[in-house]
Each structure stands twice: as C-alpha cells, then as structure tokens.
Image (tube, rainbow, N blue to C red; front, top):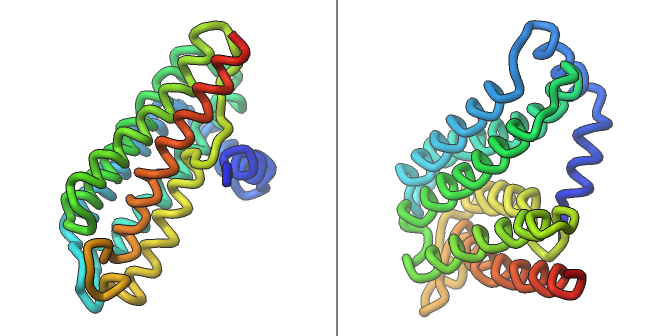
Length: 213
C-alpha cells in the first residue's frame, strides 16, 4: 500500500494546507508546538476509542475518536511545512516529530485494543509490528542509509485503515463474521491487519537495509 509518499505529496501541494502552514508560521507558532498538539489529539483519540467499545448502534465516542485521529494526522503533516515556512527545520524537530509519531501510534492502537475491539494477543502483536516497522526505517538511517519509508504498511496506511474501519464500524458495529474465533468488528480487523502487515513491513525494511549495508 505505502500511502506515505502519496500522502506527503498531496499535503505538501495542497493549497489549503499551505495556507494553514503560512498562517501558523506568520503568527509565530512553532512546529514543535503543533507536534505536541498532535500528540494531545492522539491521546484523546485513544481515550475515545477506549470509551467507545464495540457493539453500540450510535457511538459518539467513536465519532470523536475519528475526528481526533484526523486532527492528529493533519497536524502531523503541518508541523514540517510550518518549519520550512519559518526556515527553521532542525534535527531536533525531526527527532521530536518521530518520537511523537510513535507515542501517537501507541495511544491510538492501545485505545482500540483496550476498548475491546480485539483480543490482547492480537493487539500486542500489532503494537510490536508497528514499532518494529518504524524502528527499521529509522535504524537504517542510523547506520548510514537513507531513512526507509517503503513497505506494505506505513503510518499513512495505518491512519487510512483506522479511519476506514472506524467509519465502517459506525455503520455496522457488529462482529464480522457474527461468530467464531476470528469474529471482530471492522476496527478489530484493522488491528489484525496491523499485526500481520506491520511485521511483514518490518521484515521488508530489514531485508532492504541488510542488502545495502
């Protein structure tokens, strides 16, 4: 899937996003402030997922969770643009952004897990896959290669899957299939995909880096 490069290109070339970046930059709002605000929205998203729980016909907390995920993703894209508008893109800012992205991932995924959408075993494997995939991408840079964004499941893919699964869960909040050991709501299936493709992506990035070291 690898939506990361596509989403990055869309964000960087969107007139409205550029206008927002110029607005924040002109008012002295720092990129790091936007990064921290994105983390706050991720924490609110995780809390809302936790409070939502599966099987409710209309779930206000799930609606709020999806809104917070959107705000987290928007600010995650804006902070880099604001840094470039202000001419102060720094290694510290890049480092902070990646740390915040990982905490954001954990808040959101943990909220879905502890909200009861999937068993803890699958949730833990999903968290391991997401963390290792991200680690492989940055560790490649640490040993002298370029940072790796490729693979089946990047952060943009995860956000897209969570939003899509969340909307489907709002429409049909019941397990699919209705019974059985693999009976989850759509949000639960999103974590199943993370568990599988996250670890596949980690292996893909490891192999890619290993062959070039």
